[in-house]
Image (cartoon, helix red, strand yellow):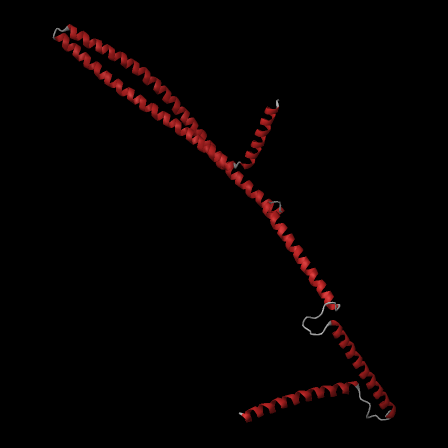
Length: 280
């Protein structure tokens, strides 16, 4: 095989592969069915043409047969009038017409044979077309069912192009969500560690930390003072039972003081309302 032959073979094989991928079986079946119907229509048209031609020949034959009868009558009349010459002419014309009739009969018979053959071919072709139509519809249904099944399987397995795009979109969304979650956690840790300043406060983290230390130191100093005072009181009044206050009594006193504060606040509000009414 020469270089050109090999190149031509490769090109044809490539084109054939491309056409096979682009070919839609349902469209191919429909096209083949339409081609067969066109052929059937051509056969029917041929039968119609033959029938028309045969009818014309049959009309010609019938007219010639009428002329034969006419020449016979002419020949008898000529014999009755003792005109043998005229009778001979009429019989000669009759003979010519009969020869033409024989030729027409042969042509008509040939056309009839062709017509019968075309009718048989038409019937056979029509039967094949009906069989092909049934097979075509069956193949189309199977093809559509196979396509649907393939789409379902691709959707379930994620093998299809659309499902691959969807899976990729989901993966990108998951990556972005994980990045945002990690960023949020990092910000929380930095804020808890005091690395980031509280944007709602005018004080820096250092100032806030110093303030907390000062408050803690003040509370500790006050607690030490309170302990010292209570220690002195215990040393001076150790024999007095009135100074001993239980924890339950202390909590009750604190609760009573809280209730008293609430009552006082309500009285203050009541007095303010009365002053407003007097001013009006």
